Image (tube, rainbow, N blue to C red):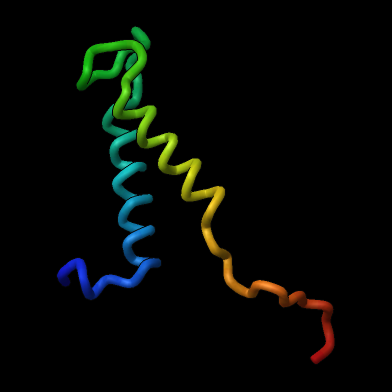
Length: 72
């Protein structure tokens, strides 16, 4: 599937998955350093964490203005 045909939800999901994969790959080892970058404070992992935080804070959950109060 090409990019122009993706929905916003699909793009956000792909960004989320990519950030999670990045965090897994750049997870610090026992010595506290990134196994790929070989530094203690990996900028790539920080960017992935920031992206996940931003997505979590701005994610639309649907049902705006509706509440479930029982009985239909």
